[in-house]
Image 1: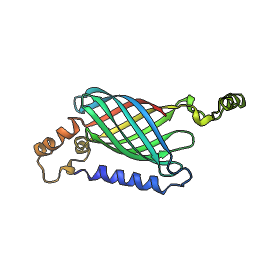
Image 2: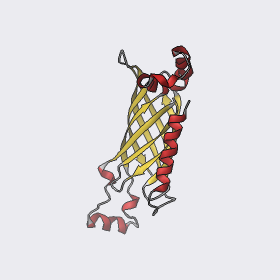
Image 3: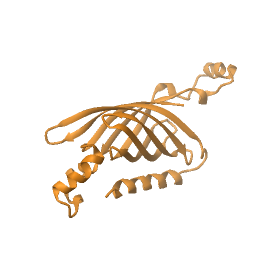
Image 4: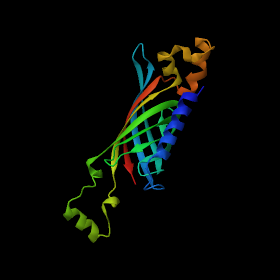
Length: 194
């Protein structure tokens, strides 16, 4: 039943490992704070707010391709975790896809760097950093993170045949718990890289 999400994760991992390798093996840790809305009933517009604080990391398989994992505390689910892969461009923008383990959703996420991450430093700033034994790479960055997520309940709204031979009630009962009654999630977060 989780094949669409698992397949998406495998495609992301294959993409990330096939990209041009220059800085393979580099890692990037982060702390992330998120706020979002869970769409509970698309017909009535019912939504439920949530928040999370996560610790995570990216491991670069090439100069741009990465796999990432993050986990932490969340409300209302208590705990949450995500696994995925994607690409980070030289501009600092990133795009990733994967699965949120709980509540169970597939996700598409983008990271938008703040101006603090700009590596085009003036000569004067570079000299000040050099006098302290540092380089532009030592500047701590942050980025805004936006995600769109969908659960198996949400997929059923768009593709009713996905339930196969299960009745509507059986399908709903199977996925209400793992998805925490959510059809989908819209989140906005801020990530501090270290």
